[in-house]
Length: 186
Ligand SMILES: *[C@@H]1O[C@H](CO)[C@@H](O)[C@H](O)[C@H]1NC(C)=O
Ligand SMILES: *[C@@H]1O[C@H](CO)[C@@H](O)[C@H](O)[C@H]1NC(C)=O
Image (cartoon, rainbow, N blue to C red):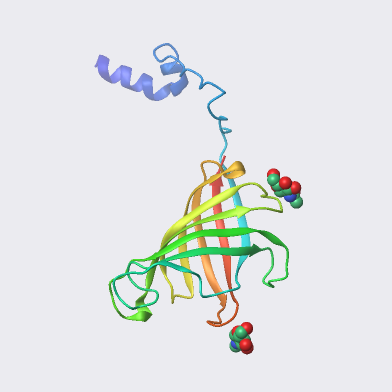
């Protein structure tokens, strides 16, 4: 009976009242180690375009078969990020990183890459901050989804998701990919 009464009392009291006397407040983190994030998580939506000016990105490691996008191939990526769809629109940063072929299937059309990319903003409202996206990239899909796994500057402790849609594709010329990035950060 006593146990039930205590349990009901605990249910009725707000947690701060229950724990006020029994749990010491955590020690504040020393301010010289890192800036403590704010208590409220923010949401930022970013819309941008990747201008793939030279689609033959350098292959730096060749995988064990002859598929130019195949298993084990590592390709370096460094592309301009623009505000608008036109390659001459405002430059807001660069997409830099690498992709590695992860599908053993020799069929070219099922090529799947694993991407690790930094979006480094050099102008506009996010100037100086970065976002890191990574994930599975079936290269012939019109749209891919990549995870937002972190960030720096305004995007510290970022997480989220992003969609990448091929807007135009030209194997010998310029291609454009549209990015929709949903970021939760402090
Ligand atoms: C962007 O940030 C860099 C480095 O902090 C700074 O040098 C540059 O002036 C900034 N650009 C704009 C347009 O604010
Ligand atoms: C693809 O790019 C090449 C080289 O810039 C260009 O000559 C060709 O017209 C482009 N093709 C299309 C369909 O835009």
